[in-house]
Length: 425
Image: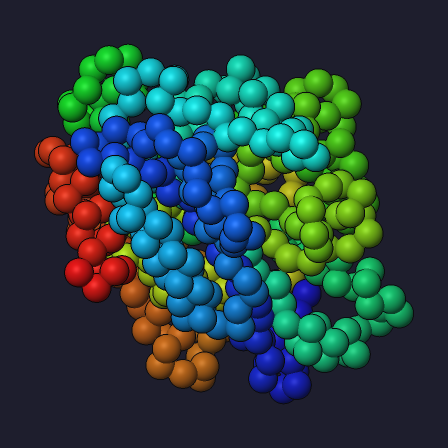
């Protein structure tokens, strides 16, 4: 763990690197999914996710939460400009839950050719296994790495003789801690309580559906495999091998098919051999699109994610049994509920309290840990605490009340407003 009390380390604790990946569906002026080809082939930072109409913006590495959000805004502005000048104007859908869907044909698989043809083959497999409706969910992945300067300072105080081994062990421990505490990120960034009825009943267009969830994509109805993953957090090699076991057993076909809110990543393309050769960063995959801010993510939520990761990396390691890992999956799903007072979090030590009470305890510990770090950190922690003290402060509550009636019609109006804001219209 990080030696956070040592002056040389503590001075560098919040030195880190951020990268954001944002998925958004392209829609037409009627609130249906666009059926035109993507038009961003010349920009490596603007790609396609599962479907041809699902835009994914990937930022470069940024040194601060605000810089990461600014990059996201910059690339989104480029997308909006392109959509504005198409023959038939299109928009970016601002929610994680999709708008009207008439059938799976509305969700065309992204088409790749030549050396990248395998990407389409993979998407066809996902379509057959999970269905295209589930693939229409959109969200944000937040990537974070500790600054090399911080890791070098902490490594110098350790007994480890191999820096690469030290770094990998730290990230594996962080992934394990994120399994225990990461549910709080699901709770604070949940922003998809309402969906169109056409998602659950084919052809039923224009009905609003609320299922008691604050985020559908992070709930039991969203991105999960058909089993609870049990991973080995004893080393980078063991972690990668435990994922490979699911491939070998046929439960998944590809390592990237392991749908889990936490993922360790190597430099470059994701692969288990590359992971064994060196962990670059951790990826948080539970972030909903937040329609209440133009960027789709509030900078304070990016900062809170960093604060949580650094805090977890600075606390003692914990034992995580098979039973704890099964419970952790349920904890993530419970944190996706709308009323967080009615569902519980069960911690490895056996403590079982409501999401609200457990989250408050976690924030208490974080506030004590970050004492003296300045007003921005203190205000961020208070901002998150307020979401648990009063449910009206949560994004999901606000979105349900603003968009619970006329979900697609009001969402389309917001999409138009956001595009106009980007273009200065």
